[in-house]
Image (cartoon, rainbow, N blue to C red):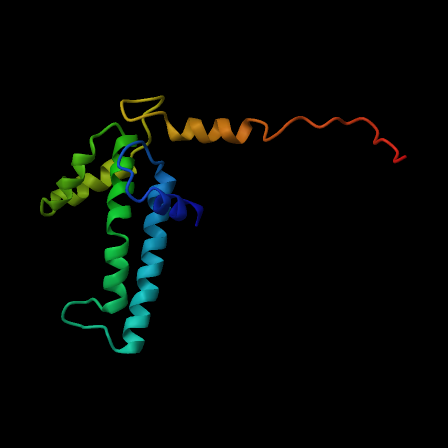
Length: 143
């Protein structure tokens, strides 16, 4: 859930890089929320079979449109590609497959023209001490 919230916090940030986990967890939670919204639409009667969308699913799709595009662009940046490659998804049949392959690839090692590698940055954060070192000496008696 942290990755989904991180993607929402950076909803309009089209620069930088996103790890595979951020992108795919965002997609997973998007799918879960969309399914829940579809159930609500069916229960309330606002779901239309012809279009395959209802009121709640339409609101959710509109609300998450820009965050989903931005996390996809940052994911493409992580593989060393321009964000404009997202447009290849509009090419029938082949475009979606090519985009899926790009999104599944590993990060470029080290920094690239879009920023530092997010894997290295998160590893440094997790290894670095969080605060000042504590003394392991015996506690002082209260006076």
